[in-house]
Length: 269
Ligand SMILES: C[S@@+](CC[C@H](N)C(=O)[O-])C[C@H]1O[C@@H](n2cnc3c(N)ncnc32)[C@H](O)[C@@H]1O
Ligand SMILES: [Zn+2]
Image (cartoon, rainbow, N blue to C red):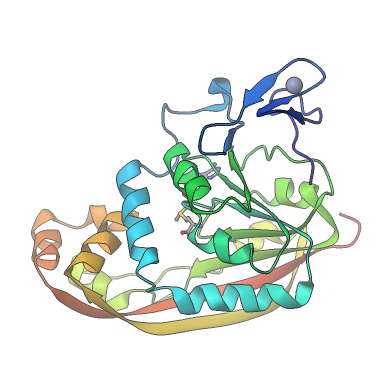
């Protein structure tokens, strides 16, 4: 799983805490241990990806354990693959990635949001943490056994490029009725999520080999509810009155509903 230069795609080698390519492009590890491989010319905004408030709300929500059954389902699906190398795309602040390190020896966590990667690097030194874009993965061709994308971007051709022949892609998405009663409290009309939509974009490169529904009740206290509203982008589209009515509650019960799917790289890709 060799790192490659985001500017010229040559291999990067490490001396002390600096990574260099043969063309002389150099990238220094941050104090927290992560590596920033997102050159300014590849940034579409000053601070791309999730903003700091979303990142911290998600960290606190996940840290409280509300999504533990989902994390357990993801690691259970991965374990039989006996992978040596794994790339977690859109790793956020690394709450899932850390559990992936328990089942796979070499893990790279990658996210475009620097604050998320900074928190991830402080959380777990076992993984290699990268600030980078999913659109141009800074990894060598055919060098990764498994890619995970948990509620994160899915650049199908790039994922296919970095996977070894026969490699796997694990995807977690919200299922149609995820957080249904929460959404009913936020919106006059609630639409089902369309979790199958992305599968079409994977079709040229991947074959689905496994699919699992993971659902469980969520008992939220006031703090968890506030964090969930902050980390969920569509909640911001609700009217201020509805958001405030919800934010004032000190408990709320709803249901989490996810789909976890495993794909295999198609032969000849
Ligand atoms: C919904 S969050 C999921 C985070 C984490 N996997 C989790 O489930 O807790 C999506 C993540 O994708 C990241 N992201 C968005 N666009 C990206 C891109 N082009 N490249 C890499 N990461 C990206 C965001 O910064 C954010 O951390
Ligand atoms: Zn270079």
